[in-house]
Image (cartoon, rainbow, N blue to C red; front, side):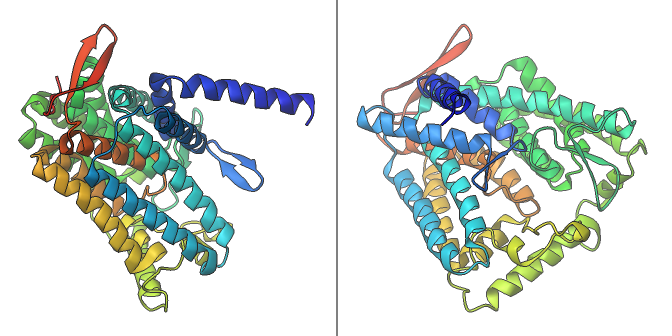
Length: 437
C-alpha cells in the first residue's frame, strides 16, 4: 500500500470512529445517506454508496452496544419481525446464487439491502436517535424541496441542467437533486413532508414544518412523480382526520401548496407536466409501461418452475431492458413493490414479508396507534405500487422507526418521555406507558 492509500485508510478510520462514537452524529449521517443516493464509486466492481458505508457503521455500533449491554432490547413482536426479514434475505441469497443469469449482480444489490436493514435495526434499538432522525430528516427534505424547484426552473429556462433528468416519456425535466432517480426523490419528499405534518415527538421546528408542507406539493410536481403526489394527498387526508394537532399545517399544505402546484401545472412551461392531467393513466406513457412490466413480471414468475422460490433478487433487469431507453440497453426494473417481492423471492418471500409486517401492525393496532400507521403506511403503499424503493435506505429508516415504536409500545420498556433542552430533546425510558411531549 502506497502513502496515499495509507492516508485514505487512516482518514476513513478516524471518520468512522467520529460518527460511530455519537448517536447524534450517526443519526445525521443516516439522513444524509438517505437523501444522497446518486453519487457512487466503484470498488472491485461493486458500486459503493454512502448508505452502504452507513450500514457498516451501524453494524459496528450494534456490536458495541451488544457487547457493552447498552441499547434498548427489542420486544418479542419486533424480534419476530426482524427474524422474518432476516429469513427472507437469507432465503433470497440462496435463491440468487442458483437462478438468476448473473448471480453476482443479484448478490450485490442484496448486500446493499442487508446493510440498510442493519441501519434499521440500529435505529430500532436506539431511541435517542429518533428525535434527531425526525428533525434532520425534515430539514433535509426542506432543503431538497427547495433545490428540486430551483433546479427544475433552471433546467426549464435553459440556465443549467444540474440535478435534473430528461423525462423520456413525456418531455421536460424531472428534478432528482441528489437521489438516484426523480421518482425516488418524489416518494422521499412525500414521506418526510408527512412526518413534518404529523410531527411525532414534536421534533420538527414550527417554521420548517410549515414551509416544508407548503413547498412539497410543488417539489413533487417538479419531480414529475404522479404517484407521490397522490400518496401525499392521501397522507394529508389521514392527518386531517386522525391528527388534530396537524390540521392547521395540513390545511396550509392543501391550500397554499395545492394552489401553487396547480398554477405550476397549468403554466405550460414544461410539457412533461401534462402527465398530471390523468394521474391514474395506465394506457400510455410511464403508467402504461409500468402496467405492462408488472404483467410481464407476474406472468414470467407464475409460469416458471420457480414460482415458490422466485427468480432471484434483482434479476428482472438481467432478463429485460428498460423500454424507455431501448437504444442504451439499460437494465429494466420492476417499479412495483409487491410484484418485485413476488418476482424475486416467490411465494416463500411473500410469506416472510407478510409475517414481518403483520407482527408490527398487530402490535401497533393493539396499542391503539392506528392513526400513525395509516398516516404513513397508506401513502407508502400508494406510491410503492408505482415506484419501488425496496433496497433504499429511505424505506428502511421508516422500518427502523416502526420497529422501535412497536418495541416502545409493546414491551416493558414502553415509555419514552421527551424533554426539550435548548436545541435538543433527551429521550428517557421509564415506567409502563408511552408519552411523547
